[in-house]
Amino acid sequence: MAFPRLLLAAGVGIVVVALIWWWTTFGDVIRYGYLPWGEAGRCLVHNSDVCSLAKALCLGSHPRTVIAYWTSAFWLGVGILSLSLLVPPLRQKAR
Image 1 (cartoon, rainbow, N blue to C red):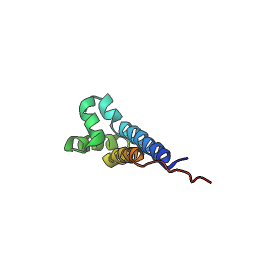
Image 2: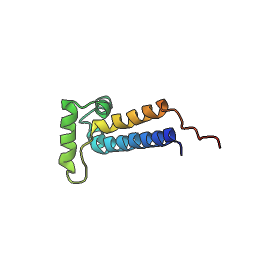
Image 3: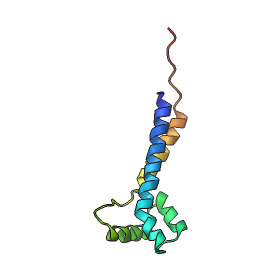
Image 4: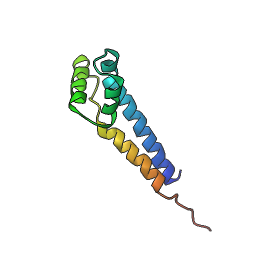
């Protein structure tokens, strides 16, 4: 597998895991109406006081099963995805 494809797969994987992790952390808060979709969506990419409060509410309901969402996980995935687009494919040497 070429290096850019490996980076692409890793980036997509990290972004998908970050989205699942975000939903696990903020899903109940959205369902119960404590936080609207728009505000919770901002918590995917940026941490704020409102996001910290929502995480505290979430961890209060199931503290041992969830580690609070880490915003940098999403940005790490986006960064790796971007890098996969910038890295030129490795060429095999002619024999």
